[in-house]
Structure formats: C-alpha cells, structure tokens
Amino acid sequence: MIQIPARGTRPAAIAATGLRKSYGDKTVLDGIDLHVPAGTVFSLLGPNGAGKTTTVQILSTLIAADAGQVCVAGHDLAAAPDSVRSAIGVTGQFSAVDKLLTAEENLRLMADLRHLGKAAGRRRAAELLEAFGLAEVARKVAMTFSGGMLRRLDLAMTLMGGPQVIFLDEPTTGLDPRSRRAMWSVIRELVADGVTIFLTTQYLEEADQLADRIAVLDDGKLVAEGTAHELKRLVPGGHIRLEFTDQAGFERAARTLGEVTRDEEALTLRVPGDGGVRSLRSLLDRLDAQAIEVGGLTVHTPDLDDVFLALTGQTLPTQHKEPVR
Image (tube, rainbow, N blue to C red; front, side, top):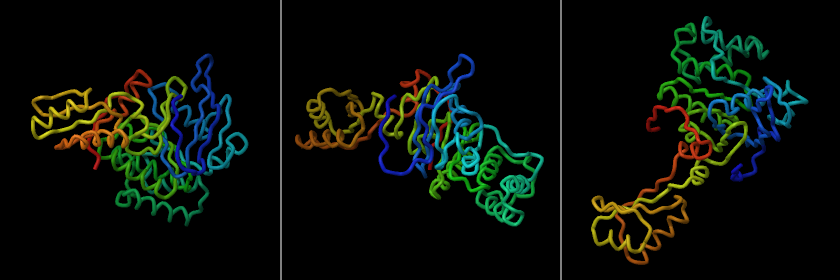
C-alpha cells in the first residue's frame, strides 16, 4: 500500500490492525490497518464491493471480524463492545427515521433508547432540532420531508447520545447539490466540536472537501492513504500553465525551460510539474534569472478521479458537480 505518514500527534479515535472478513470463499477485507486521529474526518473510498460498508459494520460492532484487533474511542472492540456502542453513532446508507412519526417524536424515541430521561431527552431534542434547522417542522410527520431534511434528521438522531465517533456510510447519496452542501456544513461543525467522523462515500468531491485523510480500498485491501493533496501528487499529469503578454517573452521562456507544451495562439506554455511549492519556486527562479516576465500562471494537479482510476482501474459513478462556495 502507498501510505504517506500523517503529521501531528493526535491520539487515535479508531485504530485497527490486520482486519479480516470473509463470507465463504469470498475475502471481503484482507488484513487492513487503520489509524484515524481524534477530531478529524477520515474518508474511505472504494468501488462497489470493495469492503467499505463491511468495514463500517465491523468498527461499529454490527458484525464481527474474522481476525484483527480494533480499538474505538479508547475501547477494545472485542473486550468491551458495549463501551464502544455508547461512544459512537452510526448513520447508514438508508435513513433510520420512522416516517410515520414527527421529527420531534423520532428524536424523543432515540432519547428513550439512550436512557436520557424524559426532561433531558426533551431538552436535547429541542437543541438538535434547532441546530439542524428542523425546529419549524418539529411536529410534522417525516414522510412529508425532503431527502435532505430526512438525512439531517437521521444525523440529529445519531447525535442524541453525544457520540465521540460517528460513522457516516454514504450519507449524501441521492441528495441534490444544495442538500449535500448543507450536510457538509453540519459535518464540519461536528468536527470543530471535537467529533471524529469516519466517512465512506462514492462522491470524490465530498472526500476532497471534507477529509483530513483519505484511504482507498480496492478488493478488500487498502491501496493508498494520505491527504487529498498528497494522493493527487502520486498521479502523473500535473503541470504549470504560464501565460505571456508578448511573443518575445513567450519564445525566451520556451527556450529556457526546454520540455514544454506550446500554445502559439494563446501564448501559453504548459510545464510538467507536481504542483509542489519547491518545483514552482525552482521554475520561477529560472525565469527570473533570465529576466523573463510572466503574465500569469496557474497550477494544475490531477484530481481524485484521476487518483481513483490510477489506483483501482475503475471510475466511480458520474456525479453532478457544482462549485463549492
């Protein structure tokens, strides 16, 4: 596996070593290791059938692993599963909301399951309804809600017990771009409050926007792990685009830099590079040494789609992309 070491000394909210799971002769997880620092977003990417949901189910105590050691929120998964359950929340691919109940009733039901007590449960429900923008529809039945509202209510129910670690298994699947961005905002606020998020997603832009670290799972094995920027630098194709205001500067730069792609009409040069600060500084120093003026420059690096294709040989489903503001 290609692994780029994490910086910093945050304690692990999730640590797994040698995690294995098989169904008959089908190996779903083949000895994966995970280290998720507390108070961060860790995203697990992979094509359908790669083992993402199985990983979440094991870490959240829903199914047992065949082998491996796991520690979640400071508790050993095998020795103290009840302690793990009390410290986590899980929002799966499909909403756990009872659509025949109101938003408030769903939250109070979850409060009862968490043994919060009647008064404490009501207070917590009111806080979450307000925090998730659902206060005005608190007494409406959930079947009248949009997909985005249902997902927000689902996540609010997960938060009823004040979990330290939240597993989000493809939480924005099927949401429109506006609802997806609203969910991203909620996730960022949770992390700012110290919650750890373990996110599986098929939306590469989602991982790019949210994750502190990303791991790519393919055929039951982790094939790469690092920040989005670090993973993008693993894939060739990065370049710097230089723009010039006159033909003379354009020609001098082309001679100075050597291996470039020329666009005569636009007066631009495409220079291969990894997009790093060091290579950019070296390029500008070479131009400055020859007193060559550059009208503008842009740095282009491969995106996570390129990384995913290079590492797995597959592409994820096409998604509607909008600029994130």
